[in-house]
Image (cartoon, helix red, strand yellow):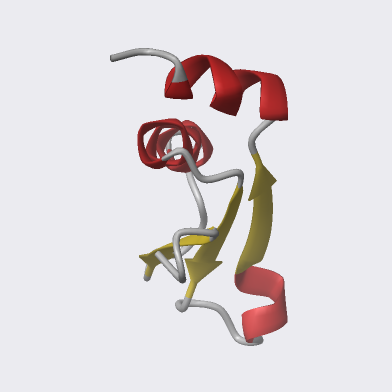
Length: 67
C-alpha cells in the first residue's frame, strides 16, 4: 500500500487468472482503499502486465461504516 491511497498487488505468472481481479477488489474493500494496481512481472513488456482496479466509492463508503 502506498500512503493508504493505492494498493499494489504483484504477481509473476504466465497470465492473470479470473481469481486475481476479485482478490484485488477484496483487498481494496478491506483496506478502505479505492485504487489498486495489479502488476504481473512475468511478461515481456511490463506495460502489458499492469491492470488498474478501481473500487466504487459507494462500496468503499459502505465498508467504512461497518465496525
